[in-house]
Image (cartoon, helix red, strand yellow):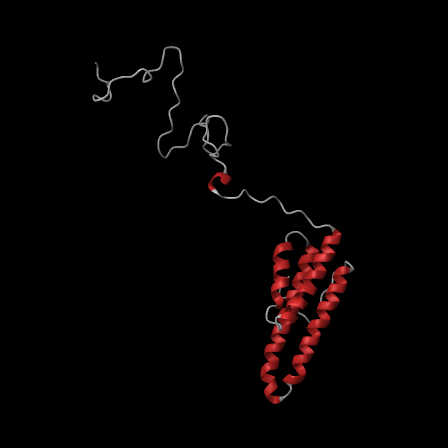
Length: 186
Protein backbone atom coordinates (compact mmCIF):
# COMPACT_ATOMS: atom_id res chain seq x y z
CA UNK A 1 0.00 0.00 0.00
CA UNK A 2 1.51 3.29 -1.10
CA UNK A 3 1.00 6.59 0.60
CA UNK A 4 -0.65 9.57 -1.01
CA UNK A 5 2.05 12.11 -1.97
CA UNK A 6 0.37 15.10 -0.24
CA UNK A 7 -0.89 13.26 2.79
CA UNK A 8 1.40 10.48 3.95
CA UNK A 9 -1.26 9.05 6.27
CA UNK A 10 -3.79 8.47 3.46
CA UNK A 11 -3.57 6.09 0.55
CA UNK A 12 -5.04 6.90 -2.87
CA UNK A 13 -8.55 5.68 -3.54
CA UNK A 14 -10.38 4.95 -6.75
CA UNK A 15 -12.02 8.41 -7.10
CA UNK A 16 -9.00 10.53 -6.09
CA UNK A 17 -7.37 10.85 -9.52
CA UNK A 18 -9.09 12.00 -12.70
CA UNK A 19 -9.44 9.43 -15.39
CA UNK A 20 -7.58 10.14 -18.63
CA UNK A 21 -9.54 12.34 -21.06
CA UNK A 22 -11.80 14.11 -18.51
CA UNK A 23 -11.40 17.85 -17.93
CA UNK A 24 -10.13 18.87 -14.51
CA UNK A 25 -12.68 20.10 -12.00
CA UNK A 26 -12.87 23.90 -11.65
CA UNK A 27 -10.96 25.23 -8.69
CA UNK A 28 -12.67 27.74 -6.43
CA UNK A 29 -11.20 31.25 -6.35
CA UNK A 30 -8.73 32.11 -3.61
CA UNK A 31 -10.14 33.68 -0.49
CA UNK A 32 -10.76 37.42 -1.01
CA UNK A 33 -10.50 37.34 -4.79
CA UNK A 34 -13.52 37.77 -7.08
CA UNK A 35 -14.80 34.61 -8.72
CA UNK A 36 -14.12 33.85 -12.32
CA UNK A 37 -16.83 34.36 -14.91
CA UNK A 38 -17.77 30.69 -14.98
CA UNK A 39 -18.18 30.23 -11.24
CA UNK A 40 -21.85 29.45 -10.61
CA UNK A 41 -23.76 31.02 -7.78
CA UNK A 42 -21.70 34.06 -6.87
CA UNK A 43 -23.83 37.06 -7.85
CA UNK A 44 -25.56 35.08 -10.57
CA UNK A 45 -29.09 33.76 -10.65
CA UNK A 46 -29.55 30.25 -9.34
CA UNK A 47 -29.11 27.61 -11.95
CA UNK A 48 -27.40 24.33 -12.67
CA UNK A 49 -24.43 23.78 -10.42
CA UNK A 50 -25.31 26.31 -7.73
CA UNK A 51 -26.98 25.56 -4.42
CA UNK A 52 -30.73 26.19 -4.32
CA UNK A 53 -31.44 29.84 -3.73
CA UNK A 54 -27.79 30.87 -3.78
CA UNK A 55 -27.52 34.44 -4.97
CA UNK A 56 -31.22 35.26 -4.57
CA UNK A 57 -32.28 37.59 -1.73
CA UNK A 58 -35.40 35.57 -0.95
CA UNK A 59 -33.28 32.57 0.08
CA UNK A 60 -32.16 34.49 3.17
CA UNK A 61 -35.59 35.70 4.25
CA UNK A 62 -35.17 39.10 2.62
CA UNK A 63 -38.13 40.01 0.44
CA UNK A 64 -37.42 40.97 -3.14
CA UNK A 65 -37.45 44.71 -3.87
CA UNK A 66 -40.95 46.10 -4.36
CA UNK A 67 -42.21 46.74 -7.83
CA UNK A 68 -42.59 50.35 -8.89
CA UNK A 69 -45.74 51.86 -7.40
CA UNK A 70 -48.55 52.16 -9.89
CA UNK A 71 -50.04 55.63 -10.30
CA UNK A 72 -53.59 56.07 -9.11
CA UNK A 73 -56.54 56.47 -11.44
CA UNK A 74 -58.41 59.83 -11.31
CA UNK A 75 -61.26 58.21 -9.37
CA UNK A 76 -58.84 56.77 -6.81
CA UNK A 77 -57.08 60.14 -6.54
CA UNK A 78 -60.36 61.87 -5.76
CA UNK A 79 -61.30 59.16 -3.27
CA UNK A 80 -58.00 59.27 -1.34
CA UNK A 81 -57.87 63.07 -1.45
CA UNK A 82 -61.35 63.18 0.08
CA UNK A 83 -60.48 60.51 2.66
CA UNK A 84 -57.39 62.47 3.70
CA UNK A 85 -59.70 65.22 4.96
CA UNK A 86 -62.63 63.11 6.21
CA UNK A 87 -60.57 60.49 8.06
CA UNK A 88 -58.52 63.23 9.66
CA UNK A 89 -61.71 64.93 10.83
CA UNK A 90 -63.26 61.69 12.13
CA UNK A 91 -60.10 60.65 14.00
CA UNK A 92 -59.76 64.17 15.45
CA UNK A 93 -63.34 64.06 16.76
CA UNK A 94 -63.03 60.51 18.13
CA UNK A 95 -59.73 61.21 19.90
CA UNK A 96 -60.73 64.73 21.03
CA UNK A 97 -58.24 66.25 18.63
CA UNK A 98 -55.22 64.35 19.92
CA UNK A 99 -54.54 62.06 16.99
CA UNK A 100 -56.29 63.79 14.11
CA UNK A 101 -53.06 64.26 12.21
CA UNK A 102 -52.31 60.50 12.11
CA UNK A 103 -54.83 59.71 9.35
CA UNK A 104 -53.55 62.51 7.12
CA UNK A 105 -49.93 61.52 7.82
CA UNK A 106 -50.54 57.87 6.93
CA UNK A 107 -52.27 58.80 3.66
CA UNK A 108 -49.52 61.31 2.89
CA UNK A 109 -46.77 58.74 3.42
CA UNK A 110 -48.60 55.99 1.50
CA UNK A 111 -49.51 58.03 -1.58
CA UNK A 112 -47.01 60.90 -1.78
CA UNK A 113 -45.04 59.20 -4.55
CA UNK A 114 -48.05 57.83 -6.41
CA UNK A 115 -50.19 60.94 -6.84
CA UNK A 116 -49.42 64.65 -6.61
CA UNK A 117 -53.15 65.32 -6.12
CA UNK A 118 -53.44 63.04 -3.07
CA UNK A 119 -50.14 64.33 -1.69
CA UNK A 120 -51.40 67.91 -1.93
CA UNK A 121 -54.72 67.17 -0.19
CA UNK A 122 -53.08 65.04 2.52
CA UNK A 123 -50.50 67.81 3.07
CA UNK A 124 -53.33 70.35 3.31
CA UNK A 125 -55.09 68.16 5.90
CA UNK A 126 -51.83 67.96 7.87
CA UNK A 127 -51.38 71.73 7.64
CA UNK A 128 -54.92 72.31 8.94
CA UNK A 129 -54.18 69.97 11.85
CA UNK A 130 -50.91 71.78 12.64
CA UNK A 131 -52.65 75.17 12.63
CA UNK A 132 -55.44 73.71 14.77
CA UNK A 133 -52.89 72.44 17.27
CA UNK A 134 -51.20 75.85 17.39
CA UNK A 135 -54.59 77.54 17.88
CA UNK A 136 -55.54 75.17 20.70
CA UNK A 137 -52.18 75.65 22.44
CA UNK A 138 -52.61 79.44 22.25
CA UNK A 139 -56.26 79.26 23.38
CA UNK A 140 -55.59 77.27 26.56
CA UNK A 141 -53.58 79.98 28.38
CA UNK A 142 -56.01 82.59 27.03
CA UNK A 143 -58.75 80.83 28.97
CA UNK A 144 -57.33 82.40 32.14
CA UNK A 145 -58.38 85.79 30.79
CA UNK A 146 -61.64 84.35 29.37
CA UNK A 147 -60.73 85.08 25.71
CA UNK A 148 -59.67 81.45 25.24
CA UNK A 149 -63.29 80.36 25.69
CA UNK A 150 -64.03 82.22 22.45
CA UNK A 151 -60.88 81.37 20.49
CA UNK A 152 -60.93 77.62 21.18
CA UNK A 153 -64.36 76.99 19.62
CA UNK A 154 -63.42 79.30 16.73
CA UNK A 155 -60.27 77.23 16.05
CA UNK A 156 -62.21 73.95 16.18
CA UNK A 157 -64.97 75.28 13.89
CA UNK A 158 -62.29 76.52 11.48
CA UNK A 159 -60.74 73.02 11.38
CA UNK A 160 -64.14 71.41 10.82
CA UNK A 161 -65.03 73.78 7.98
CA UNK A 162 -61.59 73.43 6.30
CA UNK A 163 -61.73 69.62 6.37
CA UNK A 164 -65.28 69.51 4.99
CA UNK A 165 -64.41 72.01 2.23
CA UNK A 166 -61.22 70.07 1.47
CA UNK A 167 -63.16 66.81 1.19
CA UNK A 168 -65.72 68.38 -1.16
CA UNK A 169 -63.00 69.96 -3.33
CA UNK A 170 -61.05 66.69 -3.48
CA UNK A 171 -64.18 64.75 -4.40
CA UNK A 172 -64.77 67.22 -7.25
CA UNK A 173 -61.18 66.72 -8.43
CA UNK A 174 -60.14 70.30 -7.61
CA UNK A 175 -56.78 71.32 -6.22
CA UNK A 176 -57.41 73.48 -3.17
CA UNK A 177 -55.34 75.23 -0.54
CA UNK A 178 -57.14 76.11 2.69
CA UNK A 179 -57.19 79.84 3.46
CA UNK A 180 -55.29 81.20 6.48
CA UNK A 181 -53.19 78.03 6.56
CA UNK A 182 -49.47 78.26 5.85
CA UNK A 183 -47.99 75.40 3.85
CA UNK A 184 -45.69 73.76 6.42
CA UNK A 185 -46.01 70.36 4.77
CA UNK A 186 -45.99 70.31 1.00
